[in-house]
Length: 393
Image (cartoon, rainbow, N blue to C red):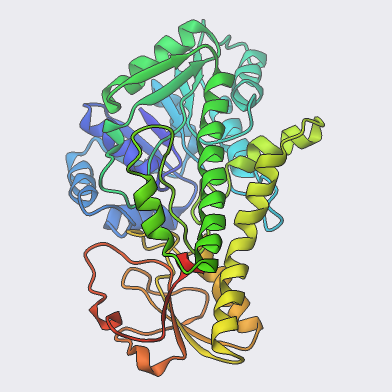
């Protein structure tokens, strides 16, 4: 088995395949990333670090940056990032390159499974058709399918193997072959009628989350108007056993999925002239949320305040601030004259912001809580009069 792309999706996927009894080849174009994996210096859940150590010791978990090695694998899983650019336009360059490398080194008998979130039609356009042009017919010579990842970084509750997996093949035979590859790494497989159905399933999942998170933030503003705690309202609404799924407000929506994936749905719809006003408005609200939080905080503090951000990771339990709304909040605050520092036990550096290891709330005009990591002590915030929860703004 080969996994192309060893980020927060590909690496746990490779570990799951190794534990299922397969020999695994991990392929990544970044030598620094490969070195970090070999040294165990990667952002994994605590339970996954021993898994990585065991895999590396086993002699059956190899790492390389040479895509030509894909030809030796019976199955190839593609798990590369599909981000958006600074203008929130989909940027599929990494995916295009990964699919091209997979096609170039493909051979008869392989099963190729795309897992990266992408446009509907990508599996057929970037894999099935180019493979057929090489003389490798999907469903006969090779098998091609889409099976979106469902990893929730930093969440110890839902292990990858415990989450059902959706699979859609270019042909029924392709779906069957992909299901055989993935069956050992998922609690349940839901085989859908096509690769396109599986691609749209993933976009639907995260667009659903985006729309509901936008609503949660909007309701937080309403709660503020009435002097009500929005968390209390959500918790009370969640007692209803049907028709409601709790989404909680926050400083914004970070990460590599929810604020990103819906654009892979929305952009083609806009190009085709298909109206999607609910999704458009939700994404606009999500994009505006960090600036709104910063402005509402400044309305409480006055000009040029000293502000401490508590938590700059994009979500609780992870050490990555690259796609964090807290970064945008800090930038907005600094542009408006604030002096900003941060405290986050999991994030060593973030955009040149001053890091404070042992903060005292009394040293700041405002302490804005954006992320609280599990199993870390925040008692220093107790009783401080200048602490503001971003979810309430």
